Length: 87
Image 1 (tube, rainbow, N blue to C red):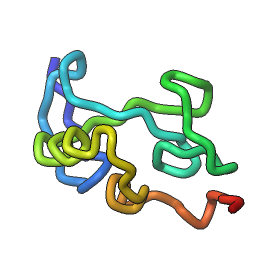
Image 2: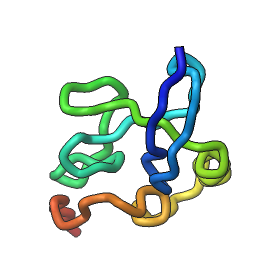
Image 3: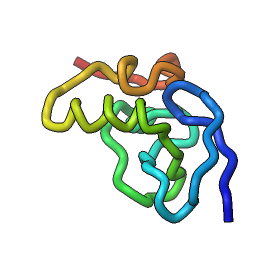
């Protein structure tokens, strides 16, 4: 089986195996790894989806491992206006 999908980060079309494609979990409403209240999502929780990443974007995610990068860097198409972050 071949999956034709858009990379969640750069929106480039990719052809991949749905079982082995690099992917990231996102909130369906915010389109990033944060809930509307600003907290981090849990893998597989209700209201989340596993979205594919192209190889170039997967390298960005791997290089960010352990470093706090802005959500806008990892998820350029996130709906940040739907996230309420309290100081």
